[in-house]
View 1: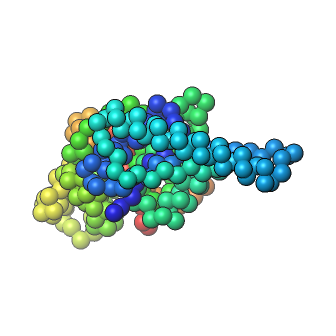
View 2: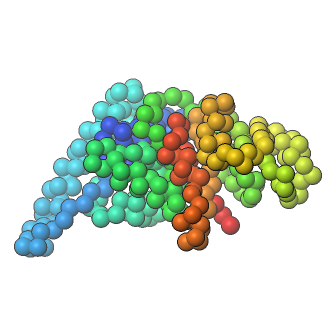
View 3: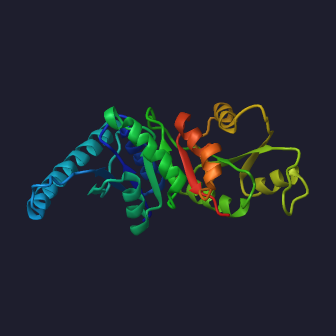
Length: 278
């Protein structure tokens, strides 16, 4: 059974990721792993043995708090959590710890609310952005105001590069939750599609795979994240899928924003981000 890792800082905002994870489990039969990462510092005067005992007690208490939040959110949605796993770690880096755990335990998707709560709100937002930019495991950023609803339509925003390989991953997700797929591409006059005569042929080929393609003219006066937001308002998908290039140069990271991270920061729907293969 495929596993989804859901992280939380116990805030009301973070509960959105739990709600979305419960919906994924209901539709796709995923096993849910709930995770909380904290940082417990060792006072200089404490012995290692005393600190380890203190740490274990703190982590055990946090695990009970984690279980309580999951049960509370589950009861509020009317969902039943079947055989969940609870993980609490002590680490100075949330994103590094989450990715390490996900890679080690063959997690299929990491799910996190795009914002935490209270003093951690800015930190949690930066963690989500960091995971979008660096995670080798597909990452789902969930809006903090997400309420449970059926996942009916997956919108795949594509630049048409590596289309076949990327579409396989999108269809794997959509098939798991039994949702339809629509592809969105912004076309420029210089578009070149390898192995296809024109965009009409592309749409016909995708239709054969039960994928509806929306080809729209690229507006150079509007940021791409804004165009994506407008498309989401028109098509009303349940989730948006994007592939992001993570090995950008220092210059690109400094001067060119990540469309995935930018969209995730303002999106009204969950965003599933895969690492783009070059």
